[in-house]
Length: 450
Image (cartoon, rainbow, N blue to C red; front, side, top):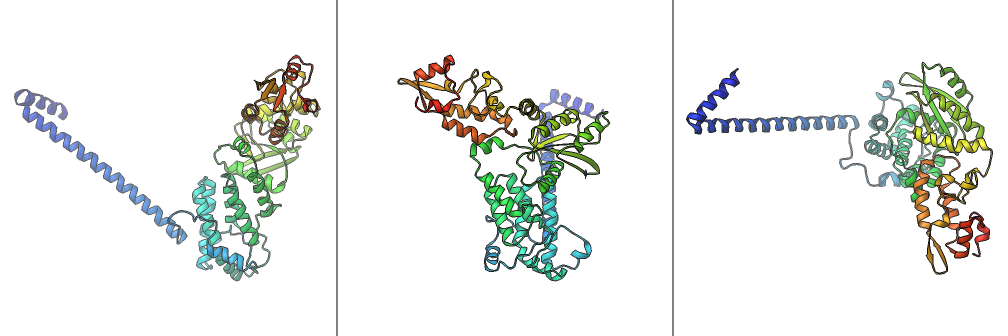
């Protein structure tokens, strides 16, 4: 009601004497601007206070933090020199425990170590790899100091074998592997080996290093094909760790996991899972998870297909291939292709399930086969023959092979090798024989002199 009276007064004054109304409007505009400025200053002050509290909390927890982010090298010069001068100072310590009676009796170096372990685990779980890396590097840098204190205070020989794991080394190696920073991961493994630190797996850091070297040597194009952007999922990470600890050298596997279900097929699915290559049950956030692991052997894979068809529609189910989360579309393609190969019993199935899909590469899903874009059709006229455009074929392999990277029979390196073995140039007569079917385009030995 007051606003109505105010507006009426302004209108009347505007009619009688317009300068007064204009002045009132100007005052109102200034008041509005002042309110906006005041509100902005309050928000800025609030953000500043929040940032200050966060810094104080970090400082109180850690004692000291790198102001400019993680150091440019994996370990400081002091750490490197210490390792080089005295390899005997190589204890192994798993600082995962934060028992109060232990921490309260520790030196400042050990207390800081436990604080860092807590932050490392927290940020790794959250997927904040930048902070996780910083705290891992700091803990690794402090290793010679707190290892000696731990040995003295807990009564073990710091130069002997301790059957526990050191969180910072293992976690940082995992982070670098996820980020495809294989050189950094290899360096961490070297430092861990030098200090006699272990990660609890069968292959230990030596096996991890070998795996990183293999990934490092993977062709760039293949690495791009394999890169998958996916959110960090602690349940998936947990299931992968269980499998990798038991089978670090398994070439290929597919694992399907699911939770308790009200489906009438639950007990049937559970029975199929228990009959798999390896069966696990574990708790995650208070819920039981059932996991079945299968290998690439024909009977194993067909067993997986039977189980997956039962549980794929359940909200709790997911599948991983070699540790990578894969969606239902990818699994569907595998079941359609590799499943058919397993059912056929034909070892040359991938080179052509029929005369129509005959191909020299070992994968007719590339759609470069006898009756569907044959390889010799990727060519241009040149002189008395045709020049094969291998780069165009390579691009097609890259594009059409993407959905089948998880297939155990898909050999990307072998496909590129067989592509290189194809002739660069074919005579017109040979091209005509390919076209009319009198010469098989997969008989490479007969093409050597053509």
